[in-house]
Image 1 (tube, helix red, strand yellow):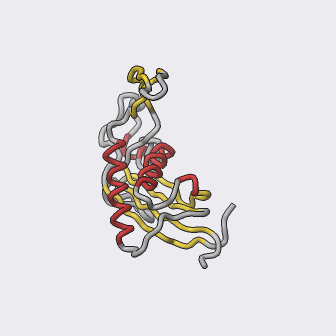
Image 2 (spheres, rainbow, N blue to C red):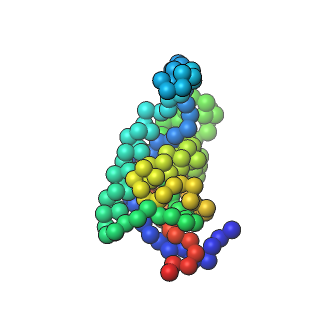
Image 3 (cartoon, helix red, strand yellow):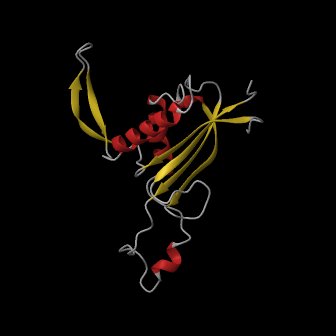
Length: 174
């Protein structure tokens, strides 16, 4: 479902290695001091998540400063997010078929790692803590959601790792 009126409210450009959020590892048990219940402690597997979320948070705050009297976006929202990841590897992986040229076959392939949906998750959470929007649950539509290698020709693809994020309100802009 596409809404008729999309009004651009905020454009954020973030530089740094995008990091996925979502895979957790078990780190033991902990007793809740208030309830006395014992629960498992799960921690983020990727050590890159915190730095990425901090970069998104800071870039969002910088973009928000350009908007006097900013209030976190609310109501139905749309977003575009284009992630730029490091360039393709220069050496072929061990599993690559013998006799198949690496450079000719790899150029057409989309960036494979990290997982796009997990990049989205870490970025959405950082935008919530930066108060770019009230909550990521307000997003009802993604226009452009993509992941590319650095310096690949295309709209919003950066020359280095990072992301271009556009946030829109939907419906009547009045």
